[in-house]
Length: 202
Image (cartoon, rainbow, N blue to C red):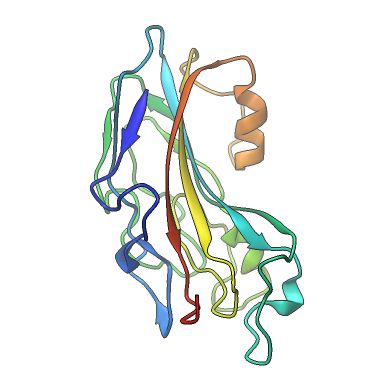
């Protein structure tokens, strides 16, 4: 199975229109174009995750003008998209078809392929307690790495071909719950990644 994108070249920079953050504020926050082929026989659905594995793990260092987050700081995952139950005959997600712009407090019912379900991304936790932005962030919300981070962030779009039509997850699900529910049902996996940074010195 292979996945590609017209929105960015694998291993190259993701354009700002697909990011949530710009150096001076919010970006276009459009989901990128994704297209795949060579699907294994027996595929009954797909699951899609977008994960940044380079998120800082020391919150008090984020967004500060007086320091740079060192490259060697331990990192964790930040989930930007979790979508499941994508029909087996789907091979394409058009750019901007699932997210196009910023939705304060999160998208409640993000658009997507018919029948697909979209889970919570990690902006749900990041904006928790923020009066203007706090809420449940479903679907895709793009890159917004800290401007003071010396590490360039990578964004992996991982597509899984599954042998079940629907995954057993709660209505309000996370990527971690998707990964657990997929165990024993993955026929194939493919991925594409791009990078993004808001640090002018990187």
